Image 1 (cartoon, rainbow, N blue to C red):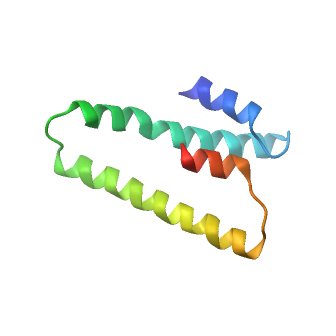
Image 2 (cartoon, rainbow, N blue to C red):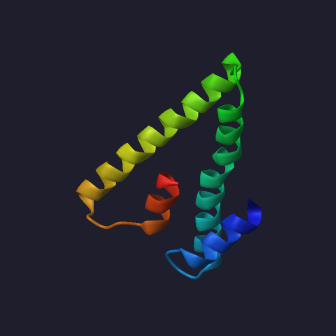
Length: 89
């Protein structure tokens, strides 16, 4: 996941500066980190209570992340592709 997040950070970023690339890398890494967990949950027949709560909390976090996009867009109609594509992934 680290190489994939690094490649995505280099390809899709706001500015080519160390801070912006680090921020972009963290967004992509966060988006990619949930994928193995979701794959494992689809293979399992029974999900433990703690794991289900964790994935539900991550889903709720993404829901509020989308609400944050809507609110920011209503104040400043500008789309940041790193946040948008990372959130969709």
